[in-house]
Image (tube, rainbow, N blue to C red; front, side, top):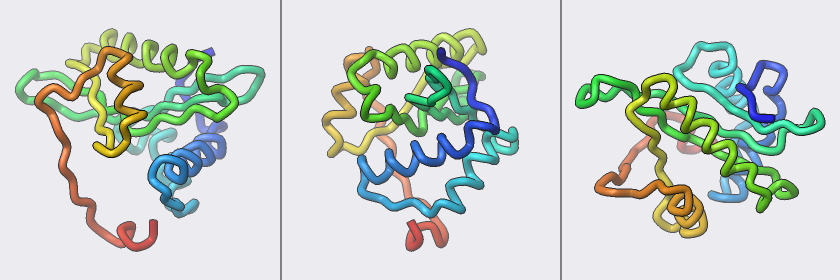
Length: 153
């Protein structure tokens, strides 16, 4: 079952984010900072949402989006910020179903589209998104984050 995440999902989402960062970027995220960040989204204090795939009371996949306003389109663009599927649930189509659900929800809400960024070195992730029909097109994200999280990741 795919559904919006709730506050009761907090610890599962934190665990999924920690596992994803460690697996994909070899980053050990600060649990306190991460927990507060996820909680801010779940409580509606930040412009984002989590969606989960839940089966038999266990969260098997999660996807977090944030919103950005596009003045060119006079509509929101939804950014996929993080995706995690537990190792035992991979290869079963759960991510594809979750992505399709979020895409349909974005269209229903009048969003101009979905975006995400993938590290150019992460060729396996790029192959997954390409297979879903997404493409990099002309868009490439460059970023620089500020603050103490640079050292305390």
